[in-house]
Image (tube, rainbow, N blue to C red; front, side, top):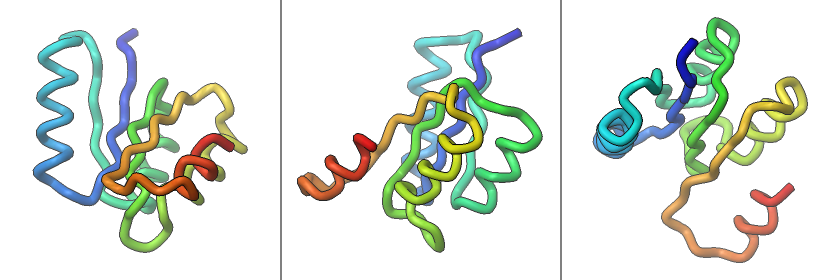
Length: 96
């Protein structure tokens, strides 16, 4: 069984860059992609990941709210929050 990773990011270029970096460094890692919360939920239902890289600024539901829902249902999933914004409010909410 391989390590399951999900990248939730609306920028296709950034998703591909992160995927390439992860697969290059960890060849046995299975990396899936989602561009929004709806796609992420579908991936999680069909294949529960071990790790999620979550963008904060997603179309529709933001990444922090989506993370809260995911952690409530799947507490063992590790979620790493990604953002270009260096705001204390984001850091505080991401730590919950």
